[in-house]
Image (cartoon, rainbow, N blue to C red; front, side):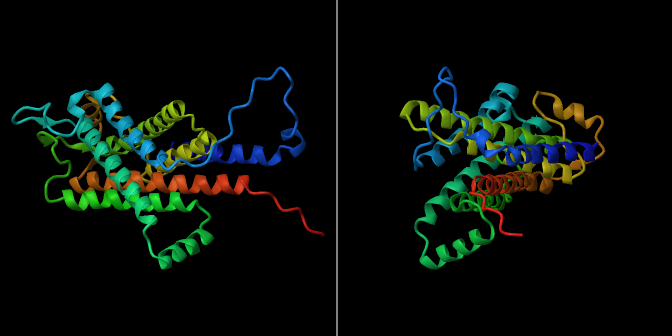
Length: 295
């Protein structure tokens, strides 16, 4: 089953690129008929506020999903639990999603801010890296910062608890629930970030490049899915109350406390790597093609 899913995933990545590569330039240049609707506005210059908007939207997407699907018990703070409560698996992984995304957004924004303060030697090293790995420098810096942010959160919170402020003892988390939670995190982050970007554009009149945004979102989701498949299976989506208990009845493998904390790092790392890969493919596709030399 895992091989079949992986094959479908690879086909989804390969097919659009192949189709675009085979489209004749003359077809792409064909003018639209007079009755065609007006084209969408071209993307405007980069807005320095967009990373913050998208980051806050990503956090809002995760928190919003938790509230709508699982209720107040899925939010950190413990105010939805009484003394001696046991926090169900789907609730503890939901809280972990908030921590993972929040720390990743904070780390990414901090890295982008620090990028402008770095000495010239660091910028030269970054240029050397992007020459070898053709990824947008801002995306590269933000991704590294996101990974560093979630790692820092795990290190700082380890003396307190696996899931700080959970509100009670944590029920055992089936491993497939932990994997499924990563997919939920990716989907809610993408929905929140794109929704916040669209709202910002509507209010300010800015025109974002939604084609590239969609590619990066698909890359991040593909990276998370690929990371899950490397573990042997995609996981079970914990999108309703009781999902953890239902999975536990058939589970043979449970995530340890350290594995639950590591899952926060895995989801951010694989999502970042997927976005980097998608950006590389996007830039390669958009680059002008060199004419073939004499044979």
